[in-house]
Length: 327
Image (cartoon, rainbow, N blue to C red; front, side, top):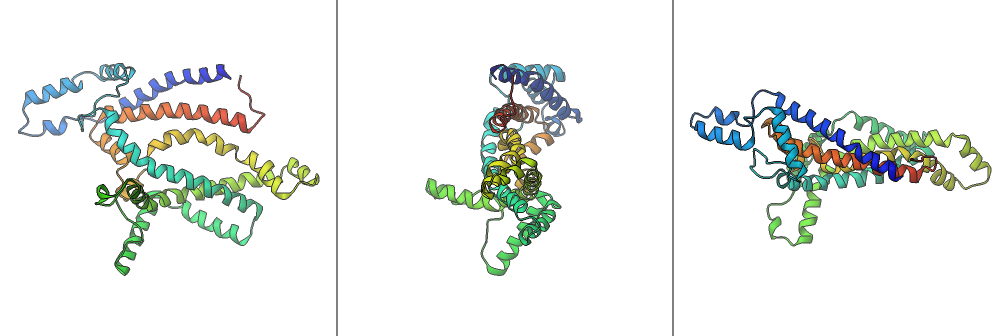
């Protein structure tokens, strides 16, 4: 097992350099750089532009810039953001924290709802409840998150126009008076603002994962070992939850590897729809402004978490399924 863990961690090295080189080159493949906007300003002084080029290394070839970034990252420095003129870690840390509010809420709801619904759909196949949720699932799967978010915002605003009060906040992460609240009230205020975006992000995920879980359960409930368990007189609860569920949940365990990078990856364009100050708007800005170190630094963190997450998934799979052994 130790050899397997060490081997997987060593795999991080080529994956890390290969992915960061690719991102570094792609981001800079577009014509121009961060200082183009300043160069087009007739009031900008040439010596100022030259000084900034030397400071950020933009007067160097791409391979030299990448080499300087690698040297810095080995010392624990992800570089300096061009836009914010601050260390990358200082810029992205608050945004990651904001995004984690949505992502953690999404993960908890996703697994808490998807697995029971999938089990119910398999055990009560073709029941009224199963058919109703199947229709709702197919409906939700047809909508991208951001489009569903726009629909939710529209409905909330219509409720506001009709009643004069908000059912749920439709934008922002907190109230304007949050600084005047106690820590506990601040937590509740942020949680209240997170309800709508979390529900939107979770909706399509539940629609997919519950259908997937239902299919897994149906497959294993039809296996010979399940019929044998029933023939031995085991209760239906034991057959479903101890024998079928333990096998059906294996793909979910394998997917845990994506949770770690997903924690910092944000909620996508839903953050734009609800004006949530998360990581996605920051990364889009970084790409538009060619803020290379900001975007590449985030990718570097994501890669490390992805490797570690996959390692954790493999170890958990071995714990769940005794047939899996790592040498």
